[in-house]
Image 1: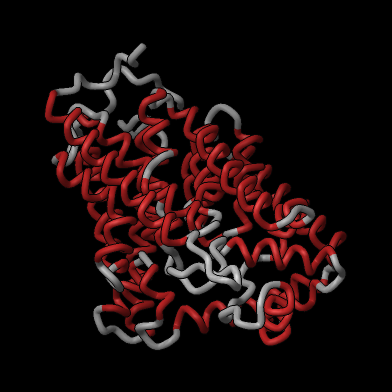
Image 2: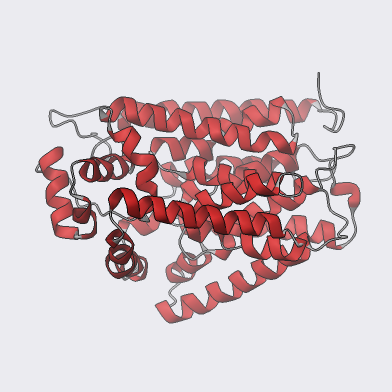
Amino acid sequence: MQPNWIRTRSLSDVAIVTVVSIIALWMTEFYLSMLWNLDDRGFSELSHRLPYWDFTNLWAGSRMAIDGHVATLFDVDAYRAALRAMFSPDLPNQEWSYPPNILLVGVPLATLPILPAYLIWTIGTVLCLWLAIRPLKLGAALELAIVLSPAVIWNSVFGQNGALTTALLIGGLAVAPRRPLLAGILFGLLTIKPHLGILVPFCLLASGNWRAILAAVGTSAVIAVATGLFFGFDVWRLFLTETRPLMTAIMEAPYPQPYQYNAITVFFTARAAGAGVTSAYGVQAVATIASIAAAIWLWWPGRAVSHQERVVLTAVLAILATPYGYTYDTIGVAVAIAMLAAMVSRPPRLILAVFWLWPFVAHLFIHGGYCVGVVVPLFLAGWMLLSIWTGGRKTEISGAPSLA
C-alpha cells in the first residue's frame, strides 16, 4: 500500500522515473561489461587494474594483518611490493589510506578469497544502507530506488565503503532522538572514515543528546582499544605519522591528478578552478563553517522541520563540510533526491533526474568533470534550507510521521 504522504504521481512523473531507471540500468550494464572484461593477468581491460578496484586495499591490507605484517600497511614502498607479490608485478601503485580500526571489519573478509569477499562486502554494505534508511519511513518504492541508485551502484563498482559510511551516518542521525545509545554506537563505528562525521558532534550538542554523545565516545574508545589489542597499539602512531601525512600530500598534490577527477568537494572544485592549496582550504573553511552553522540551526530544538528532512539535509551538508570526498561518498545525496521527489513541492523533475544520474554521466561522458558535481549538494542543501527558512511547510512530506 502506498504511504499516504507520497504525492500523487502524474503521467510525466512515471515517464521520467522510467526513462531515468532505464538509462541507469543501461549505463550499469555497459560499464560492468567493460570492467569485467579481463586480460590474461586478471586485469580489467577498462581500468588496467584488478576489477575489484579499491576493495583490493581493504582485502589485501587485512590479509597482511592476519599474516602478522600489519606494519607493512604504513610503509608505502613495502605495501606496494607486498600487493604486487600477492596479485601481479604489473599492479599499478596503490596506498593504504584507512584508519587501522577498519581492519576489524576487513580481517573477517580477508579469510575468504577476494571474489566472494568482494561480493559479501558489496551486498552486505548495501543491506546496511537499506536498514539505515528504513527509520526514515520513506516507503518501499523510495527505499528500492535508493539502494539501486547510480550513486550506490557506482560505490559498489569501486568496491568502496560509501554504502556503509552513509548507513552509519544516516542511521545514527535517524534514530538519535529515540535510541541515543544505538545512535552513539553507529557514530563510533563511523570513525572508520571520520571526516564524513564532521557534523555529528554539532548535531548532538545542538539537540542536547548527551546519551548519544557518551555512547559515541565510549564506542570509539572501545574500538580504538580493540584495534590496539588485536594489531598492536603502534598502529595508531603509524597511522598518525605515516598514513595521515600521506593522504594529506595526495589531497594537496598539483591539480590535476587522475584520482582527483573523482573528487566532489568544495576544496577540489576550488583546485579545479585554479585556486592554490591555501586558497582552496580557505574556500573549504567557509563551506565547512557554513555547514556546521546550518546543522546546528537544524538540530536546535523547536525548529519547524520534519525529522526526515533534518537527517537527509545533514547528510547532504556532510559532503560540503569535508575537504576529502569522492563520488562514492555521495550516497546521502541520492537519499535526499529520492525524498525530494516524493514531496509536494520540490525542484523541477528534470533537475532531480540529472542529479540522480550524475555519478554515471560524469564518469562516462565528462572526463575530469566530477568536481563540478559539488553543485549537486550545494543546490539541494540551498533548496531545502531556503524552503525551511521561509517557513514553507509545503516542502514537508505531508502526513509523514514525526521521528523526533
